[in-house]
Image (cartoon, rainbow, N blue to C red; front, side, top):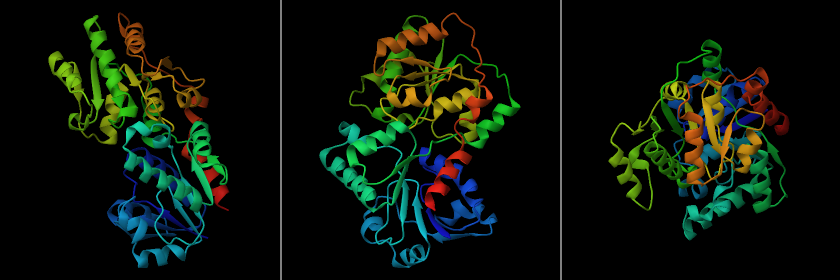
Length: 355
């Protein structure tokens, strides 16, 4: 069989991690693969002798993708047996069976994240993908329940959890105990549903009560959007030593910050899976996360601390309880916890469902 796989988002945050994680294991199925995307990003996969690259720079969710996708590329795709995309964008005129991964349905659950036109457009894409797809994969039972709630159950939805990148597992094997610094780290897109505003407010309150820690935000200050610039004024008033925006970092640089920090805080209001807490624990760092349903699902039986989502006072109190007056400690995960989420399992489920 020949699989056409949309790889245009291979460097896009969680979607890219998911795709890079499953590809090496999918290749082991000994089928033929057509990888759709920019060759400079995909040439590394040509070592698999059953792999070809279809050069395509059409942006996902663009007008061109949906209504004027290049005919020559569509013809190549339609000569394959199966089309798979790790997101819910599907080009025009794909005639072969379509399989997608819909990581979440956040805009249906949190319509306040966009305007009326933006919500209409996103729901159109969600509904179109649901209608066209033969099967849908998603990354948690929570996401599955929300997809069915908003789009119905006319299409089968299968959970294929996200998982750890090899770089974290390799680090875990080589480095058992890392000396911790007095730093707290946040990793994630700087958007409203990630809860960074809540974390900054709670951190500044904890600092005023004597917390001797620095907050490191993996991301750019220029991308920190809030309707009230007062929060940035508060950051500035604390001086450059209290809160640091790192800007763009490589995976290796993120891992270094994460492994040296005493605590990762994930204050999300909404996630499809939420990978940074798992990455943090794998490299020995404690985590404090919001008590949203998906985190309760994913991190059941893991050594995590919860706070009430959106509750600045509760988050501040938990920061002080965990960090003030105590030496930093390392988290050690057992073998079952390390292996619960792995891309070999995820890819195995996908391959099974494709046949």
